[in-house]
Image (cartoon, rainbow, N blue to C red; front, top):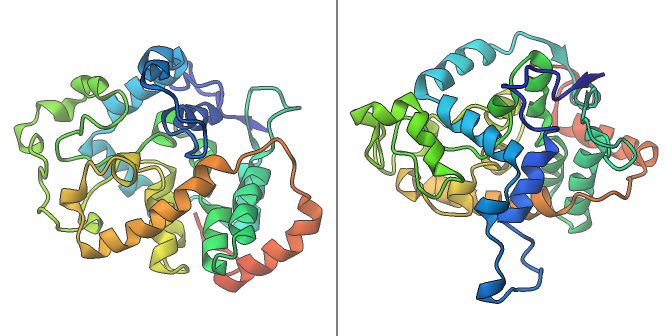
Length: 292
C-alpha cells in the first residue's frame, strides 16, 4: 500500500490527507454545534497545526497560473490508466494514512459514508453517485503528485487572491502576486464571464471533473468540481466571476457541502452488504472503464 506521506518532507507536511479535512471542520463547524459567546471563540489561526500551516504555505506559494496550465496539459489527456469507478475506489484504497489504522477508516468506506448519508435523505440517484465518487481525484497522490497539488481549498489563479482564502498571507511568496495583470479582482478574466473560463488551482476536484464530465448531469459535476472552493461557496469571495448558470449550480454545491464535511464517522459501513447497490448505481451512469 502507498502512504500519503511517502513523498519528501517538504512536499508532504501533513501526516495524512485527513488533516486538511479536520482543519476544515475547525474553520466551518457543524451549524448544529452550540453557538459560543464572542469571548469564547477559539483563535483558529493561532491554534491551527504547524503541519497545516506548512501545507498551505506550499499550496499558496506554488499554485500559479502557469503551474495550473501545465498540470492540465500533463494530466487531462487522461492517459495514465484505464479502470472503472469501483476499481478506482479500490485503487484509492491503497492510499493509506499514517495515523492509527484502528481508528481511521479506509478511503473507500469514507466515500460510502458520504453516499449513504445522501441516500438516507432521499436525494436523486445522480446526487448519491456524486457523493460516492467526489474524492476519487485523490488518486493523483498515487500518480506522484504532492499533497499541496491534490487537496486544499481551491481558488482562481490569474486574478487577485482574496483575503477570504485561508492564510492569505502565504500568497506573498506566489510569483503571480508580482504580476500586475493579475492583481485586479477579475484579473485576466471577464467579470461575470463564468467559471468555465476561469483557471482554478489544481487538485483532485478539477481532475475528477474532467474524468467524469461526459457521464453526469451539470449539477453533479459542479459538486465535484467546486466542493473545495470554500472561498466562494462559503465566503462569496469570487461572485464577480460567476455567471447566472454558475450561481444556479452553486446552489447544488452548497447543498452537497454538509455531506462532504459532516458525515465522517468511526462507525464502519457494511461494505459487503452495500457493494451490490453501489455497483448497480455506478453502472447506471458510467461505462465499464474510464480514462484516468
